[in-house]
Amino acid sequence: MSAPRPVRSPLPRHLHPVAWWVWAIGLAVACSRTTNPLLLLLAVSIAALVVSARRGSSPWARAFRLYLVLGASIVVLRVALHLLVGFKFGTTRLYSLPSIDLPGITILGPVYLEGVLAAAVEGLRLASLIACIGAANALANPKRLLRALPSALHEIGTAVVISVTVAPQLAESVQRVRRARVLRGEGGSGLRSVGRVALPVLQDTLDRSLLLASAMDSRGYGRRPVQSARTRHLTGALTLTGLLGAAVGTYGVLDATAPAVVGLPMLAVGLLLCVAGLKVGGAAVERTSYRPDPWTLPEWLVAGSGVAAAVLVVVAARLEPTAFVLPLEPLAPPALPLLAVVGLLLAALPAVAAPEPPRRGSRR
Image 1 (cartoon, one colour):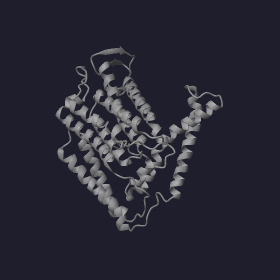
Image 2 (tube, rainbow, N blue to C red; image 1 turned 180 degrees about the vertical axis):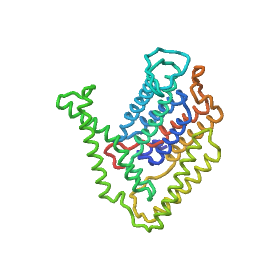
Image 3 (spheres, rainbow, N blue to C red; image 1 turned 120 degrees about the vertical axis):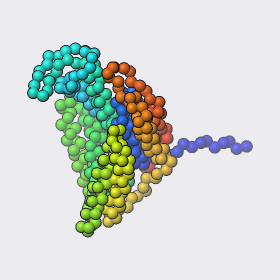
Image 4 (cartoon, rainbow, N blue to C red; image 1 turned 90 degrees about the vertical axis):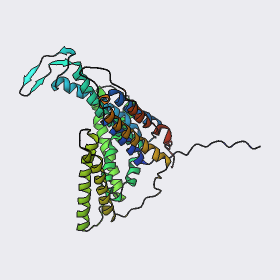
């Protein structure tokens, strides 16, 4: 009797970048519907879990920490602005600062716990959105994303790829400059080193971005094809109208008080017009793609988990709107709606469903 064959794990490969962005946008939509700090912290934790489990060894994979630091600084800045010039409200007085009355504004003054918590939660919501976008930026390969974009968006995609690679290159430049300072015996940490590190880091980042732009331009990225005036005008009209409709529809979906016709119907019409504009505009663009990224079951699971998280949170927010805000008057602990928690936990599925990314030196 022959021995059973060992079960082989799937080969490491890059997940389709569009799947990562769909997942991240779904998680960001879920975060935008609530000011409940428990749900926001859960969403940020899930984003960090997926990034730590499925990030590769590329430079942009190490940029997620920068987005977390940026989010934390936004929370601190939001609270500081509230203490300085914010509208002071609440019943639990923490302390009183000397106030300065100016026309239409009061600087400093009494500080209440309710106002500080409201400012912190608003900052936390914006920080969670930045963490979601940072997770997509750390997980999705921007160069592969450019290959997956429609032909009509090739010029815009080139500019976007160059812009989104600035943050990962900034993180790598910081490490390079600090390593060089340590080798010279100058020390690599501390507040005093920030001023000495900032200029070489910015110069190195800009140089690398310009080199990337030059390399992409030499390979034909971003070149405008020859089109007739009628095609250009039709493409612009369809795309601009579609974008306006999609923007209004997205606002209707995110705003619970908006009329129903402004939500999903407007969003669907806008997206259809955008697709029509991309089809017309991309008809004259000729380009090839070597070994296009496949869209298989892991891509469906990753994208579907983000969409499911957004849908479940939106539905739960309509069923229990009071559970998605931090109760301030009177001050009480935040609720934990079960349906929203299940939706957010579904967003953690890519931590096990997405394939392992190839490590540095692999050709896949």
